[in-house]
Image (cartoon, rainbow, N blue to C red):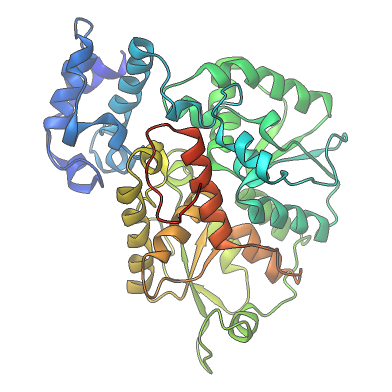
Length: 410
């Protein structure tokens, strides 16, 4: 049974989905989607205004809240695919398409070279796949992960840059073409290098290799691990050892206020596309709880919220997206936290940008960045203002209708 028929047959219109949705607040969105997805529907029946399908973060909160695991997101996804078939690819769908002239990572790479990892191209049992964002934009993520592997004595190879895009972002935006074109090439390259383990940073990359590739291209002969899963394995194997007191370090750096009592309290931000889409939420928490003198304020993903970055909302409705990101700081503070830990380059960038709109936003660290520091490594260079401005400048140059420019970029 296809998604639409199943939804129409089983949905009771109980409202559980819209009660938790950060974008839609009435059940009219479901009716509009039913009407648009009907085989006889005309293009003009596409939901508009408050039910615009571009408003969906694809966060999947609606799905996990639905008693029958239906939600809204699944309907939005197939509606986006139908829209692409009817009207062609939108500019936004080309942002992470390596074959598109308006790929934002190509543009960023023209301004600043992507990260050059020292182990590019070699054969090894372990391959690190940083993805486009950690290679070109949010470089602290990719660099920190490599530092951890180096500190643990791992013999690894790297597949980085836009050339090794996984295609998942475009796929999620309703443009499956890039993934279909490059998926098998990525798999073949991993096989050529003889890898037994593929470590991915981006939740989208993880989902591509773990879920989408096997479904489309068939079984793979290598294991796929998200960074947090791999770090937890290294801890269990006694290869990852913590050598720095993070409470002392963060206090000395004035990242957190000094205190004679109590640990540094971390708020782990659950990436929607990692937690609700593929079920990874225990591994990152296990890793963080292994660090001495830190405490987690949210030991489970219950009541976790979307950062506002996903589903293309940041590109089409930037103010709405950043306002949603600012809410994460409030959630973390209300939980008694003094540091936010992210596990997705998009989440990190958006939460940093959301914090810039507040007078008292919390410090934000990527999981790998935080763990690299706890291992005793030197801090990975980062410039939050540059990160935010560079990504926004790329959107200005890549999208003809994008007008959000509070940073004065050209």
